[in-house]
Image 1 (tube, rainbow, N blue to C red):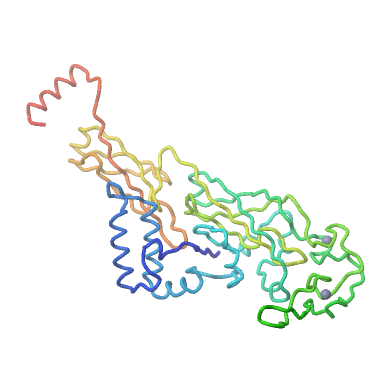
Image 2 (cartoon, protein in one colour; image 1 turned 30 degrees about the vertical axis):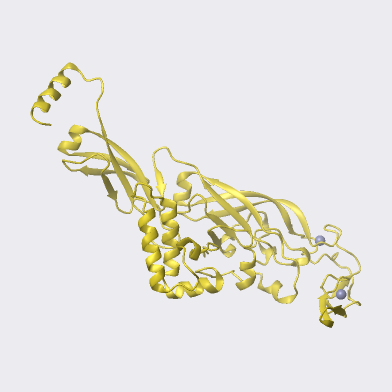
Length: 369
Ligand SMILES: [Zn+2]
Ligand SMILES: [Zn+2]
């Protein structure tokens, strides 16, 4: 599976020029990271994460040059150079690309009709690529952490199965288009302010196909696509976070006359959890202990995302102290390993003391506690 994270202006995030030197980028990162560190009083975890992400790319020579060239740091299967990137005009923030070849689990049996790679169709003639679609997908807190398979209902144009997208009625007689002699292109002379110019345009008689059928497809009336309700199964990768976007290449609307399909963008929303808070790949939880436990030390069962663990709290623990449960956080998208769980200690101050408790506390007070 391949993810592509893209379309964020990392230069803007780090507040540096496109021509900034390595040193300047490093300096800018340090300054901003310092400013927005989540442990700071007015820190901002999201901002901090973003800065980190930008620096991971711009701070690395190879990744930076790739980013400068493509606006992305990774590319892979099913991804078709400039054509693929063309679909990003709509500001899909931090989109993850999922190669649909990995999602061969498509319901409804039209998986084969899409030509997911796209290169086959794109190489032949320029036709109108299908529209991109955008949807919001809401996940439970744990689904985002562990990944999930979701069924998505779509109403979209899909390739007509009567004509296979050609728009021709099966068995119809196919003739070479007379208007363009089968080339699909017509050359016309146009007078422009620069003088007479030869302009090559798509043949309107055959819509660039170079051939014409004696009869249009009866199902799609020659469009090559029909509107349909369909369901697709989508694998959401483990570790995805609220606000991120998953891109499913080729799952948008089918293009007319067999042109490539658009992409489907899933904007991810994640429901909150009562117990866990998420900060990037780390999980934050509170643990309440009594002040005698804090003073004397105690062992406590702590809920983690995959069961309970025993946390040993040493004597002399103070309010707000954070214990790190290594690797008990969220799996890292695009890389290995997990974040941590950060357990913050809340010391409960007792109310409604019994007479005896009060007496004992008064004695403690006399002892200077
Ligand atoms: Zn023609
Ligand atoms: Zn048809």
